[in-house]
Each structure stands twice: as C-alpha cells, then as structure tokens.
Image (cartoon, rainbow, N blue to C red; front, side, top):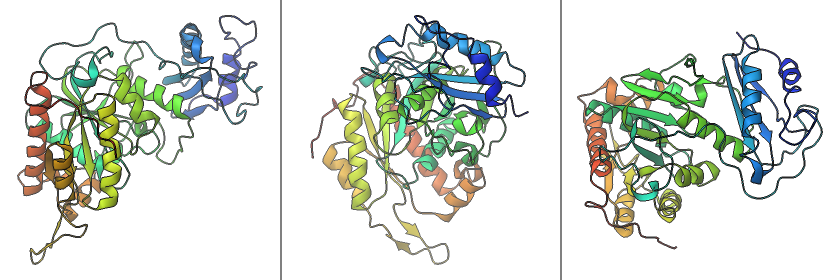
Length: 396
C-alpha cells in the first residue's frame, strides 16, 4: 500500500483554512513538499513563529483531513517557522517568518511519570514536559560522526535490558537513521485507535526510528524546525508504556536537534562517545560542553575503538592511540564509563542486526557493555545530586 498521491493530498488540504484568512493553506503557500511512504504522509506547514499556538487547531484539522484519505496509515504534520527555499507544491511563496521557532507540533502530555528516583526532573529536567510512563531519558551523543555512537547506544540499551531494566531506544537521527538495521527490524509500526504509534520491539527493547516510516533510500530533505517537530512526535506520540529508561541515539554534532532535545526534554544525563585520537576528542568536548551549558548532567565518556586485539595472536595494538578519553575525562572531571575495543565481532553482529550483547551475551565485549550499563543506571537512579558534582562549564 503506497498511499494517495500528492495531488490528492493537496486537494484535501485546499479545504483547510487558517484562523484569520479565507484562503486555504495551499493557496497561501504554507504547505511544504509532501513525503508519502507506505501509507505514511509527512509534510510541514509554515506559520508565523509567534502565533504557532493559534495555528495548532489548523494543524489538527489538516491531520484529520489527510488521515481520512484511503490508503493513509499515518500522518505527521509539523508546524514550522522556517522559510523554504522554493515552492515544492507549486503554491505561492509564504510570507517570511518572524521571531523564534515555534513549539513542536503535537499535543503535550498532560502529566508525566514521577517517582522512582530515575532522574526525571534532575539536572536539565526541571520545568520540561516529560514522557508519560518513562522514568529516565539518557542521550548518547558525539561531537562528530563515525565514532560508533549508534552501535554504542544500541548495545547500551540491550545491556540495560540484560541487567533487568525495562528499556526503550529512540533513534533521533532523522537524516541517517540506523536503528532498523542495527536491531534487525523491518516493517512499519502500527497505530493505536488514538493514532499514537506503537514502537517496534526486539530483544525485549522497544524501538522507534524514522527509518521505520520511510524507505531506507529516501532522503529526508527537511529543515531544522520540521526535524525538531518530528523528534517531538516520535518521543511523545509513541506508546512507550512503562519504561525504566529510554536511550536516545542522538545525531552527531551540536545542531538544532541536539540543542532542542537538551532544552526541551528532561534528560537525566548524557553519555559522550569518542575515539581516542585528538581530533575526535576535540569534537567530543564540544558536545559535552553543549550539554553542560543547558544544565544536562554529563554521565561520562565512552572511549570506543579504544584498542585492537589481534584475533590470531592476541597482540594488542593501539591503532588510534589510547587513553585520550581517560585523560579528557579526568580534565573535565567526568567518569570514564568504559573502553570498548576495536573488535571485528562488534561490526559483524551489528551488520547482521543482532548486536554483540545479544549475539554473545557471555563474551568479554558484552561484559564491558553491561558494566557500562550498570554505571549509567547507577547514575540516573541515584537521588538528585547524590555522588555527582554540580555541572561545570568549561570554556576552551
């Protein structure tokens, strides 16, 4: 089922009007390019930033209208104040936006789970809307790509589950989602009667990724505000159920998505992944300082590809040097959570969709990840401030 074509969707949207204009949202040039994939319809609607809340009923009306079309299995509409570079739908160019970006589209939860001492509301979480049923939210981040962050995030989530926690993992990399492949999951998530997405599940871990909603080869040519809105919906409009901890695999870098997650989500803490060499550590330091500047506790640093053990002779080689993350952790006064070797089996099991923590649960590498998971869980389940120094901003 491929869903309706774009012209059919635009025809339906021509019946939707804003709060203060007789013209429909298509004639006003408010509708972005429309993405249709396997019955899922996604697009953004450009509105004045300072009036985003007033346009929310219009967004909901558009969502209802498109959802009623034959073949539509899900709808994701983001309100955005980002000015588009061209009219993808053939409509007129929208008026230039003013002010700051709007709040993310979609309903905010009326309540959030409290208690359990899992860090919700600690650090940067005060005053931020939580996710119902979710105890602690932990970001796994890096300052740059290519350091094995997603592999680390997946194995951390699986190790937490192996240690007895109820775990979910969110793939926050809209442009390059990797969780479907790493977790060996295919197919599309179902929706509840309230049009809330049900997360996929494997190895006892609940999983949500943009990779489940679009084809693997489909490029996500989205601007910042739409990415932010999509993240908000995947976080808060998913039936996560009761989770002890939700691991968020962040996109690399320190852009819109990272800053929004840090500022709007009650993160219990962040884990920074780096390789040992100086260039990677420079970028990791940027990511770490970003979280500190928005009062998100940094739980520690993971040195990935820390060393290489020859599978034939057992000789150790420090391909990317060694110990850089340990020195950086000491300098920044954060824990070194683990040193994960450059191991072919990590790559092989990840490519096969059966990460090493579940493929070889009694192996030495799985043991490293489980120790890492224990350290993370201890940090986020401790009472606020216990055993953790206050955030300290470092300027380089």
